Length: 265
Image 1 (cartoon, rainbow, N blue to C red):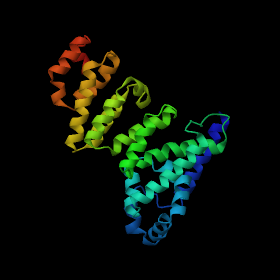
Image 2 (cartoon, helix red, strand yellow):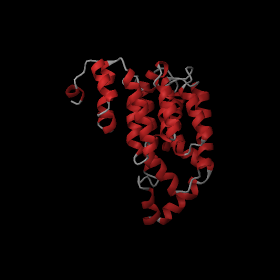
Image 3 (cartoon, rainbow, N blue to C red):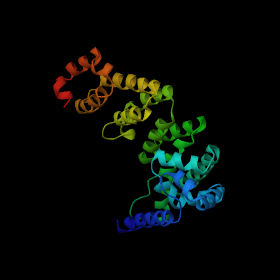
Image 4 (cartoon, rainbow, N blue to C red):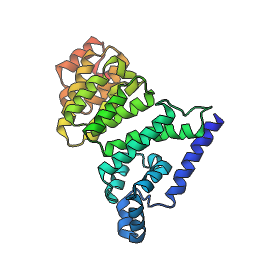
C-alpha cells in the first residue's frame, strides 16, 4: 500500500511539474490571445507527434480529465482527430502490453505497471474526443470483453456513450441493461446512472434524449430490484414529464408497491 501511494504521488508530481511549464489555463484560447510567444512555442511542440506523445504520457492523460478541457486543448492547438487517434492507440497498445488489460494499481506491482494502468484507463477516456466508427467499435469490444478488467470495460462503456449517436446509444444501453453488463457499467446502480448522465450531456439533442428515455423507461417497466427502480425512476421522472405521467410508470409503481409520493422524495 505504501508503494502504491508513492507511485500515485510520483505520477501527480510529474503532472504538476508539467502544469507549471505549460499553458494549462483550462481555457486554452487565453494563451493564444494573451501570451502569443508561449502559445506559438507550445503549438509547435504539440504538433510534433513524438513530443505530444511524451506530453500525454507525462501529464495530459491525467491532468486534462474532462471532455471540455480535452476538446478545448485539441481545438486551440489545431491537433487533428486522426493524429490524436494514432497517438492514443499507440499508448493503449503499449500500456495494455505491460498490464495485460489487468488493473495493476495494487501493492507488489512494479511502478512501471502501475503507471501503465493509469495511462491505459485515461487513454480510453480521451478517445471520446476523436472517435470514428472504428474507434467506437474498439470501445465496444473492450466493454464486452470479459477477459479485460472491469475498470477498463467500464471506462470504455462510458466513453462509447459519449461519442455515440442516438441509435448507437439506444443499442448500447439495451446491451448494457443485460445481466452480464450490469455490474460492469455501474456495480451500484447499473446503466441507469450512465444513461442519466448521458441524458444531461445530450443537451438539445432531442433524438439522443428520446432514445435514452425510451430505453430506460422500458428497463424500468421490467425492473425487479425495488431500490434500483426508485433510484432510476426519480432521476428519469425529474427529466421527462412524459415518463413521469405515463401509465407505464404508474403500472410499475403499483407492481413494486411504491407510492408516487415515496418515489418522488
